[in-house]
Image 1 (cartoon, rainbow, N blue to C red):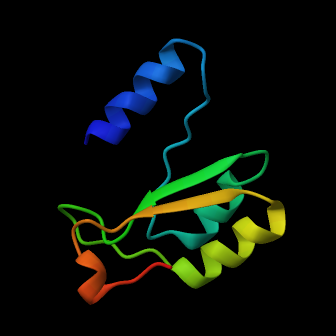
Image 2: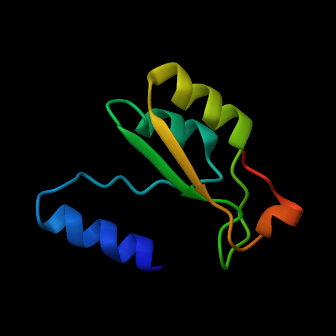
Image 3: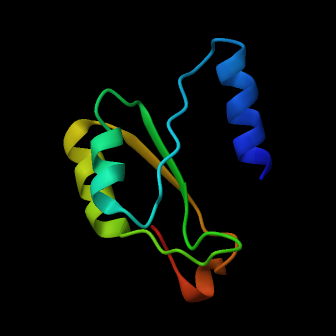
Length: 83
């Protein structure tokens, strides 16, 4: 989506390092948090409907001091409330 395009553009400009990880693989996401400043994720994903383990990822991000933002536009707050 547009978030990914913006991230790629910022990475190309040397403004950030982007790590793309399968959000349904909680272990891989946790590994990618090492040295990160932000965890930006979409859950459930569009169009594959993969769901992130938000409680586990939120706890690990908080433990490491990594800020976390969740785009859940696809589900809307009626079906998933990440806050």
